[in-house]
Each structure stands twice: as structure tokens, then as C-alpha cells.
Amino acid sequence: MNKLFWILVLIGLPISIIGSIFHWSAVLMFIVYCLTIIALAGIIGRATESLAIVLGPRIGGLLNATFGNAVELIISIFSLKAGLVSIVLASLTGSVLGNLLLVGGLSFFVGGLKYKRQSFNKLEAQHNAGLLIFSVIVAFVIPEVFTTTMNDQDTMILSVGISIILIVLYLAALLFKFVTHRGVYQTNDKQTEESHEEEKPEWGKIKAIVILGLSTIAVAYVSEHLVSTFDVIGETFGWSELFIGVIIVAIVGNAAEHASAVIMAYKNKMDVAVEIVVGSTLQVAMFVLPILVLLSLFFPTTMPLVFTWPELISMVTAVFLMIMLSNDGDSNWFDGLALLAAYIIMGLGFYFI
Image (cartoon, rainbow, N blue to C red; front, side, top):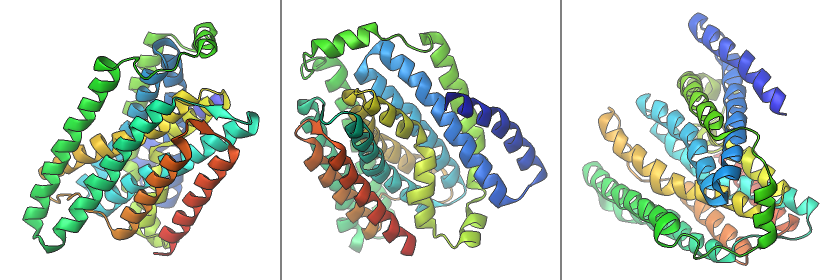
């Protein structure tokens, strides 16, 4: 699989450059761009896995979420530039659904097939549950409720205010986790600590960081051209902007943590897997989306923090389902299957909208 990622990148990047210059078929280039981004995301996953071994599971999970969401952020910025606000909001909805239901489901399912029962930090799961409820339910539902009688200007002012609050709270959450309460909620599992000490990273710290940087730059280039194919793809396959954003863009944009979380679960590193799944969701809701709302002020088309009701209900349902299945700090393959089933049901719904 690792060799395949490198082969796809070595072939996909030149074709992406040549195809964009000579304006090859949009459908063909859409496929090439998606495969190239997924391959780059796989390489990002390997680099962050090496850093996770060196720096520990929490920081490793944060790095996975950050670089995985960097891809999503880059695609969204170019979409905003093109005025595709509905695709941006849909892709961020898809990120929340994809992380909690698809990635979380695959992680629980794949890990559960190998191990009958897998455990992770129960206290941290409960702490993250509160943040999930705040970031998705409070911060997303409230604007939808209050903006029904507002004009566009007031809606944007409210969106900017909520975005600033979300960013401040996200930074405070990082301060809480990594500074003021570092280690307070960690489990004292000696076997887990010994396994981390014995395991050697595939790449050294400097090499991993360099590869992360170069891969992110490559993703930025490919993402800009990927966005330009959305109109043609929608017309060709009959896909709505909502479906393209929620399913296609979200899966491609978050492929890094998709692969990393499942690999970690298969290796029985559930603390890292859950940190990737939930941490990435929180980062999208509390940092990536607010940043995009603020950045949209510098573009011709602004993006208010207002979702459609299908998007909101899907996200709220995903949050409650993940909380119910993970709050006990225990997972199995059936939990994973339930999450995957929910994702498929929602995907079908968005396809027929």
C-alpha cells in the first residue's frame, strides 16, 4: 500500500500539471486529482504516524487531525474563492459525518474484527463529548434558529461573532489538554507505555516534518484544480452541490485521517484512533469552519455560519450516536457497524436531495 501511494503521487502529480495546462477532460482530471490527493494523504498519514510514535499519542493525534484538515481547509479556500459557498458548507458537514461515522465506524469495525474488545481513555471521551455538543449543536443550531428573521448583514455579523468565540474556545481547549491539565486524564496503562517505547518510527522527526510540508504544498496545487472540475462533474453525473460537498469532497479532503485512524485501530492503538476521529471533528467545527467564515469576508461572496436543516439534523444525530457508543471507553465491531450504517443512510439521503 505504501509503494502504491508513492507510485500514484509520482504519476499523478505530473499528469495533474500536464492535464491542467492542456485542459484535458474534466471528468478524467477529476479522477486523477482525487487519486493524487488520496495518495498524498496516505503519505501524510505515514509521516504523522512516525511523529505520533516520537511525540506520543495525543500530539500524534492532533498532528493527524491538523494535517488531514489542512487538505480540507485548502480545498475549501479555493472553493470560497470560486464562490461555491454551498459546497464549502456541505464539505464541512461531510467532514463531521465522515470523521464520526465513516472513520469512527471503520476504526471500531476493523479493530473489533481483530480484537473482541478495545478500550480507550474514558475520561477523555467524556470531555470530548461536551465539546462535541457545544461545537456542533450549540454553535451550529443556534445561528439557524436566530437568523430566520435576520437580514443578510445581521446574519453575517452573528456568524463572525460565533466564529471568534469558537476559535477562542478551541485554543483554550488545546491549552487545557496540553498545558494546564496535561496528563491529568491519562490512563496508567504500563503495557501501552511499553509498547510505545519499544516501537520505532518509520521516519525520523526531521524527515517526517519535511515530507509533511512538501505533501501539503502538493495538495494545495492539486486542490486548486480539483475545484475547477466541480461544475462539469455535477452536470455529467447529475450530482448536486450538496452531495459533492458532503460525500465526495469530504472523503477526498479527509483521506489522511481516514487511513491513519483505521491503521491505528488495527494496531490496537485506540487512544490515537479516537483522538484522530474526535479531534479532527472538533478541529473542523471549532477552527477550520470559523476560519473560513472570517476568510470569506475578503472574498466577493461571504459565507454565513448557516447550514440547511438536512445538514444540521445529520450532524446532530452523528454527534449523539458517537457519544452514546464511545462514552464508556469501550468499542467493538458491532459499534463500528452501527456507525457505518448511519453514514450509509445519510449518504443515500443526500444523494436523492
